[in-house]
Every structure is written in C-alpha cells, then in structure tokens.
Length: 97
Image 1 (cartoon, rainbow, N blue to C red):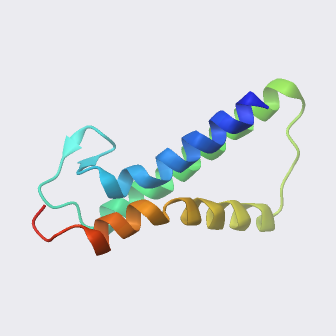
Image 2 (cartoon, one colour):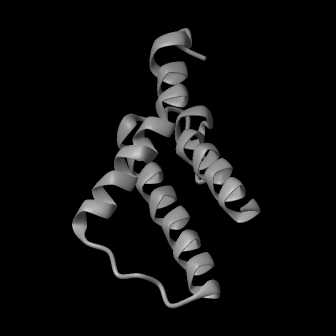
Image 3 (cartoon, one colour):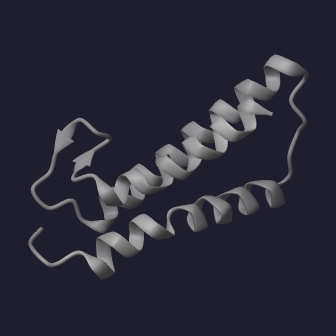
C-alpha cells in the first residue's frame, strides 16, 4: 500500500515539474522554456513513472499485459495531475517571471 501512495505522489510531482521549473529535466537552464520543451519533458516523465510502476509490479509478480485503453487512461490521469502546474505557468504567473 505504501508503494501505491509513493507512486501516486511521485506521479503528481513529475506531472507538474515541467511547468514549474525553468530548467529542462532539472539540469539545463533555458531562458525561455516554451511549450514544446515542456511537452517533451512531460512525456518523458510519464514514461519514467510508467516504467517505475512496471518495475514495482514486476517485483511482486509477472506484469500483466495491457491494451491501449490502459495507456490512454493513465495518460489522461497524468494530464489531470499536471493541471495545477499548467494553470500556474500559463494563467497565474505574470509575464516575464
């Protein structure tokens, strides 16, 4: 149960990092990180969290094979988790910050 809570918390943090941080993957500072870079970073974080979830599942048993519906649903959930960071970046923040 603890793993599920930690994975959910990590997913929520990873979904918001591209919109909150001005650095690309937390390393490369970009003067103006436009939406394309943020989207790329967001997809990479989605894949990383999915890989971590798959790794945790494989520790317990053989991972269950998934159909496309599973991946669409988890992508939509990841998008919902990223809403606070997206709103902060594009609606609440003043231009030039």
